[in-house]
Length: 275
Image 1 (cartoon, one colour):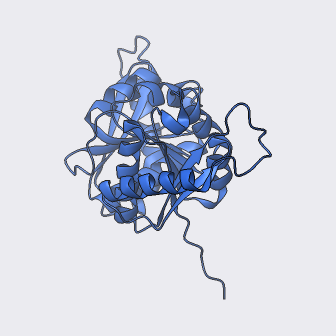
Image 2: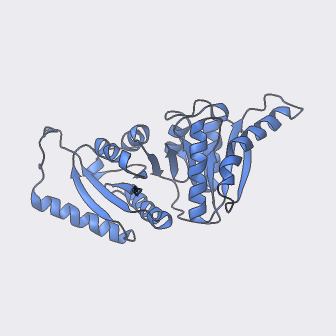
């Protein structure tokens, strides 16, 4: 008889305000989903230290960093299963942990240990290369507001169904609704036939997923706009926006660098990029 391994949430921390928000989100997610949270602060090698040379920080410096990290976790509400300081590459370390994680949670930008690193660097690299779902915590700090829905971007791709399953699972845990959104171009369709076809395609993708979550209320939303702008706009009224790491159909070309890329830069709430 085999026992399933519970994968943890891994939260990357660097001492910046953005990573404080990400840490609070990750700890809340752990409580909501019943998952352990591992908090990791990665101290990047100085440019003059070879990457193979471990232990470039003195023991008292590591102790100070660990004390500061423990304090940050306590201020964020506590509840982490483990808190660790790691010397090495930030992106390499976080992505290296991703095969064993339920998700990675990072802030939108950082400083300190992530000195000078903005979106397009750590957050974008982790979102691009991690082997698990990545949540980039950005926008307003809304927390688990049940009045706000989780919005999932839907097209015809398998990745879109994965995103829908993640969104419904989050909604069940958080007690909120799901809005399944699909962008489309009317292209002068006075008969409404194209809109009917798009609505059918949206329902066809989401309905099988929704059947597995009968306790979650959901609705559909067709948006006549470019996919990236559509998702950014709907994120203004969401507690979380969810997309697959790539897609096609209603969100043609959905991959990092297009819709997901734009959301990581411009969404009004945290963004989950599902794998």
